[in-house]
Length: 342
Image 1 (cartoon, rainbow, N blue to C red):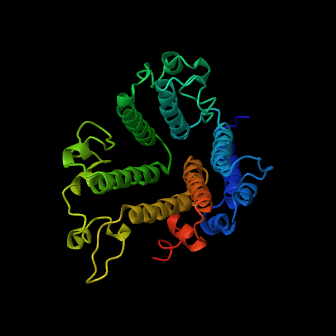
Image 2 (cartoon, rainbow, N blue to C red):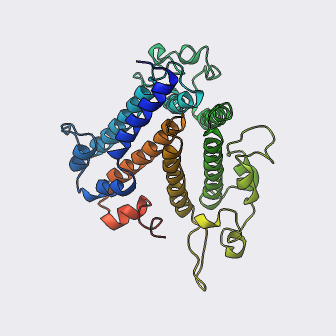
Image 3 (cartoon, rainbow, N blue to C red):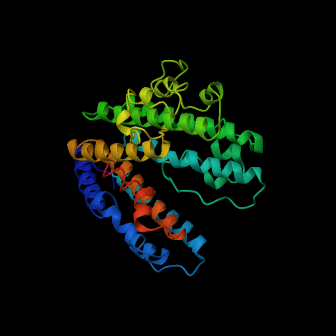
């Protein structure tokens, strides 16, 4: 039931706080890595009877159920408002963009059944009831350009366009938000996409040996002026930096995210370390903002960030159980040991 803005702010803050108190983040995240079977993990996270299915399917179902619970909780919080802020709806629409990638791939391979999608109703950008008519599914909205089934060779380009469009929509929604916390939220997300571009640059450079021109065409941009783009300019600065040049990297604006250097030992920038270190910073800032601006849109945006981090922890715990990874190694993979102690 929708409430007036003041009542809705108070209700959602209290409700979101209660949910976070029971979430597997912060000190409670370690609980996920204390269980030894997927069945135990299911009981801990989903709290329903464990399905009698093979472990590979159980892992997938566990992760999907956890994600569904998260999205349903977020939708319920957003529906508290008669006119939700644009940023809240944009965050939900992330799943429509992701769903459309899955749908495009399924249609490309002539699959008869629509893939499992995350239900974003009543905020959906895609009319899922119109499957398999892709043009009808996207008609009349911001995704209407996606009106034909992509070929295998076109999928990557379409997925890239979807990614860029989502980022632009989210940044635009933040820019239009009128709230005491809007400036802080905008800084938070601008840095997030700067770091994601940096990580993408490093991975393409290190693992795929792409040249600078190729890498530039795989980054997310806010506008047409690529050189001065807020989201990409930091990534563009490091394009020609040797990945093993500590003297160069130690002067980097984000040097606090780098893997440690030991004098006399070979060093190379580690994207995984940067990702884990930044995840800790990003979630930590979101947690502080959650409490700093209680009666604004800020708590729900930050709740979304924190709960997405919980989903990452759940996925990591599930994968580590299936691969029989030790607890210490599992915590390391999740960034809950080396970064927290570093």
